[in-house]
Image 1 (cartoon, rainbow, N blue to C red):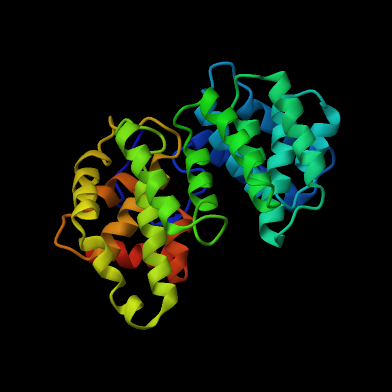
Image 2: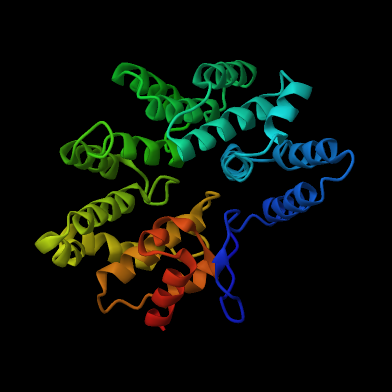
Length: 315
């Protein structure tokens, strides 16, 4: 995973993270949409296929590219246009379903969850080893409030294909939270079980930290004395030890290899800033290299401004 120094690099929202090919595609798609050029749909579809279908592309990298494109194109006709042109292309089917899920997350409900689910099942049939169709179905099941047995059936399909799938673990964390279908006790049990089994550099290594940030935000949202004491969450021995370990290991270029590692480093930088302790956090910001993710910084308003304030404090 390449890292770059932030010197001379202005922080900016970077959904593609460190994926240069994906970043170039996003810019091309944005330009094509703005210009509405003749034959633009065919050109855009060809460009998307080129980025999503190389034979040497890892499943993890492809899933990252699909998730970013799905959110970027959630209000675009391009995913459905590609699926109509190639109705048995698993990437086209998956991008269409994923973009519909992202649109549904924005409105609170999907317009046709059954059709998206059917597209995912076909994509899974065409590429049985790929966990991504099941990851999208997990998102659909959560958004549409399917029965618990259906949610866990999909979860089992994912982990059978990819034991440490980052997107799936973060999705289940949200599902088990008090804000959705679970409780704080279920969150703690889920994270505790994961902690004892997961390799330190697994793609889902940030789940424990995401759970801590969730608890911290919940305390802030309740207001009053709990909000005033929210920072104390970061002083507990377990949390403090986790931050110390992550600060040593996560910024190393050789530690993580998954596609969303920069997003995990953003989580770590946010938590270290929220903790406000004496730790030397500059290595984390150096590793991020100005690539800002919307979450979790948007909890404090404008994400880039929040990132810059934390970065200045670290320096």
